[in-house]
Image 1 (cartoon, rainbow, N blue to C red):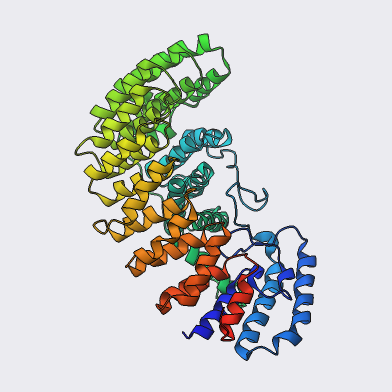
Image 2: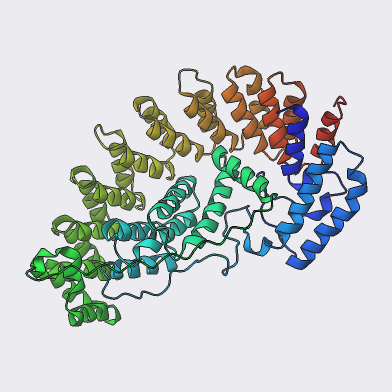
Length: 559
């Protein structure tokens, strides 16, 4: 693509804040540095009328410009007029504070509707945790629905609600995981009632990740904006398919109750017993806890589903007796789900005994799911021993990479003054890329010059992988490091990939000097691909100087 055509594309896809003054009034100011798909603060009809009026005003001016430029800009205004009609259905990108209205995306799971479903109680618990704002717990519970009961009537939508809960946590790791969960729903539960909401949620999450430095999401959002300017071709109505013949239910003759598995056993659990157990929530704790303790002490085959419900009910009461019951269930119950739930709820019990038990579980448990719950529970404890338990686990040889990464993440979220030294030591000892990547992120969460200098050192270390260096560069760019320190790196970086990352990092800075640096690269860089990168990210800026700068380049005038 020639330089002229690339500049035309940059101007055609740019936020209107970088277009000439005649067109700049047709949209609200851009909030982020990726194409903004939302027009905010106006009624749809008014927005459409203003866009069409602006189109009429600028036509005489545009015909004087090179034909390809005129075509690009007129096309942009047509797109604005067309997209204004649908702006009420499109979210905005910006601060991930969930600023969309309630009728745009599902924000609260519907009331449970399948009492006999094996995942019904998990769904009830997950829904309650989400509505209480306990997003990490809610995400884990929703995930357990489709992993444990993939045929549950709740399974298809559980993907969406897990992703929604993860997105509410508002950190990069959770947002990335939420995208993966939404992709999984698209693969495995296309018929879920939340699919439309899932697509909207995915756009919003990807927009936020782009704002935080995810170049893949940034490119995806930019491409979506470009496609939005092209009117779609109406689909050809298809031929109605013949409804399939329902399968004949398999015969259950000769199958005993205990042969059909846990799911059917829970389905056929005595409704009277279940109702009695649920009614304990309304009782005084002094009366309820002894009964629940007896239920959890049962080990007969028929008590499994009751124990799973009882451990949740116990967790709803506070006090030393609750702690003792949960600790006993975590250590001794033969059912993995009961043990996991007990560990999960222990995260809300802040006591030395709870920390000791969680440490023991983390060190000795053979079940990764149980260790995962123990890591989270320890991270919620305000205790030096809990923090040391996480450090010991992160250093331990032979543990799974996934669990180590979770321990590293929670260590980085703590407030220990010496966590920088620990993370630096751990980075030097570990060799797997994913764990080291997590250390880079954790270090970026620590304010101060020491962490910034260390990240810059990783970015400049030619012995490290290029991907780790790029990530270190991005995270230090997100800190409050003086922009001048980042600018001097450009000439020192011999690698094109690192220079591309630096250009992206500059585009995410708020300083006027960062735009000046992009101007400089666009003017003087001899590598045409790097020039194009600088031009593209300039086109996403809302700096009022950018439009004139790009037009001067297009006209062949020196800047």
